[in-house]
Amino acid sequence: MIKVIASDMDGTLLGNDHRIAPETLAAVKDACRAGIRFMIRTGRNFHGAMQELSDTGLVCDYIVSSGAEVRNPQENIVLTYPMSMELCRRVYSVIQEYPVSMVICTDGYDYRIGTQEEVEESLLLETMLFHMNLNREEVKQTRQFIQMKERTRVLSDLEELEQKGVRVYKLFFFSEDKEMLDRIKNRLEPDKEVAAASSFPTNLELTDVRAQKGPVLKEYIESLGYTMDEVMVLGDSLNDLSMISMDFGATVAMENGDPEVKQAAKYITRTNEELGVAYTIRELLKQQKVTA
Image (cartoon, rainbow, N blue to C red; front, side, top):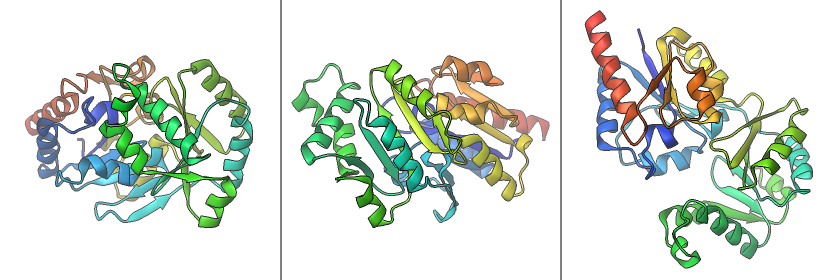
């Protein structure tokens, strides 16, 4: 019997508008009322996740920053796997050879190295890739650009961040040059302290090797007294693969998911735009009611 549901956010729980549909929220709350524990697992940090969930009334666990931080339903931090500053320096020394901006993701703000003008331009170019039909000034008015700018802080160098004593959870790179991202990934692959994944083809995400969605989820649910066969997981992208490929009770890929994720999953559900998470939860509740 499934006692825990752990869902990715973007491309899974959320629609393409990055919002949770009322039908999906209702299904999640019905699962909770049926005694199932619901967990969010996402590449976003906690504050980024709460931007979309704070007004939903949803009480759940949070595995955020791709597994670098875990919070209980009271929103208290119970586990962290930050990157060491030495690891950040090793990565930074490699990527300086490439024309790509490094986003330093923490439990609060995102940080970028450069001048204010350079950082704003990188934010603009990144957002424009999601809004190809808009001009530069129109992109600046989008909710996505405004939110990214609000949560971004500018650094002169890594030493400035170290002096602040901020925990680094993830290093994020975004580029349309997929071959360049692959070259960076291959350069860093020999470093056994780093794990590489992607939310979509045009990005690269680096974390401490311990901070991966699947292993962290397993560690957390077992600390709560659950077993792997009591857990259903849902995801769509390559940074969900460490979880989808593990032997949880039900591993569910979205129809809109990456082909490799769909191949690894035990089940495939409807797309996020077709409310695949809501559909899967409803089917689970019906099945478990019949077999109870």
